Image (tube, rainbow, N blue to C red; front, side, top):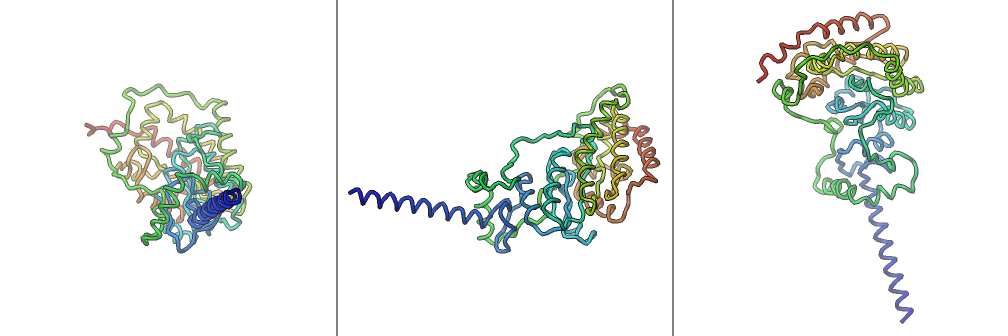
Length: 355
């Protein structure tokens, strides 16, 4: 009787162990966030969750250029970038990210990939005036970011990852669906135009008094932000070219800053940022705030910040052509022209036809 019980127990344990090994093997093969290996050509993958997937892309994909940034970079097409820059690129965007999150992700990628020659990186104007450690996201899957194999149990035995990742990729593979491309990854197609921008724009009825110039304390905050999250990183990797660009928000964003009385305050911060980045030899800094025909045409926007995919395509073309490049020789002239344009713009005409 005892011997039979032992045999039964051993058989159950063997079956359980075998099932766990089989499940682990299935998980390892389909590896939805590329934590263990590069994608297999016989598996179809859905690229869909930036903060879970991007570190695996950095680890295991073959590339020599990264396109990164906030939602302002989500509509970039790597297929276009590859042609324009003669590169093999991947896209790693983080919706709503602060500078620190983007910088830390690039730091991990640069450490792992010695062939990384170029990075295209958004410089969101609304993030300049923030603390260097600003973040707006909780619950990071840190077990995916490190090299500790023991905490990978949080990945392999995560029911949500099984359901949304492994089983989804298995179904795509069995039904012959193609993998998500980097052109499609995180990209959005939404209605744009005046009506859509106005629907989400809560304008201040009365213009606030103009804020005082940037205080010494605030100037230190801006300096620390740019130093930690840009300058320190690009200085560490002098053989990589960083194409950093000020994102062209719509005229309604400039109206918002004007109504808040913060427009000069912003310009002070932008000037500090520009001067710091121009001291980095491997940074090519672009400013598209003077693309007035784009910025003042709300057909290009879905809200006061986000531009449509065709603007992303134009940005790649501008960067590749050197259009909008800021240098030590031209930055002050460009800065003054930009500043005078937005200080003197007739913002009320934007709203003449608002219902």
